[in-house]
Image 1 (cartoon, helix red, strand yellow):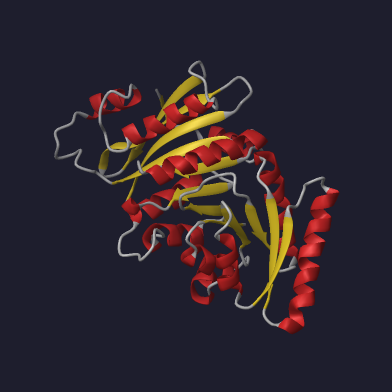
Image 2 (spheres, rainbow, N blue to C red):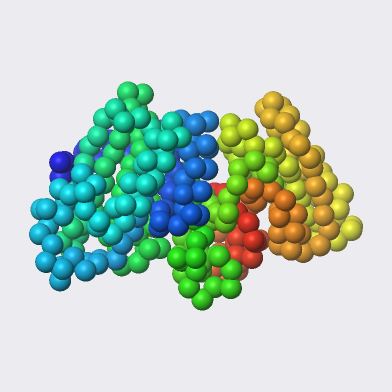
Length: 325
């Protein structure tokens, strides 16, 4: 078992990670989270991504008072022999990746432990790496809350995308599957793209929305590239606030289509609607596997108080939404 790394080694690891596409998949044992993992695997094949499975458990979740000897707990965790919180969920995720062919049993394995104050078990991870440098990581993280743990894990990353399965386990008092206690906090504060997956079934196409801004066009380019590697049909959409500006919205989708045509990426259709952008995007998005909307670029605090279209779509949509950054 490897315990800790030096500051120099840590910096070297971070620099190497920045060169790769890294997906953080949050695991809670629900059907939704494993659907999300399958999506991550499909997406990752196109860009040779690293996939990190994360289970966050509360600090000292019954371990101190339960009389569990810490050394035994860690050893058993690494051997998958003990029903510690989250271990079986992570193991199932690993088995799914093996079954899908995204990981093999003969990958090199490294175990790492990090002490956490106030918790006898601390943070633990197992990293599997193949000869080409692709890695699959199982991470059992200790934190004061789920959202806090996810955001802290990003800081240890970095990551290009965080995927959360919007399951009943995280529902709380929410009227829909979307959990404001977790998904909202992560979506507001995470510096990378965030996908909230609700019954995510790949194959029904991606609806990529644009408002014509330079930032939105860059996001269209990046997401269309990823979508094409998944073999997912792409549709482009823009919404005009009134009939007078419909021509401008049409211009936005035409420009986006021309850009993708130049990249040899096929666009199935372009859609222009008139009305409230949030309502129109949600209504059109029902027929797609995933709605993709670009963030405003504002800080987390500004997003919280001002409320971007992307954030409102994520909150109110009934299907999966990806906010891109």
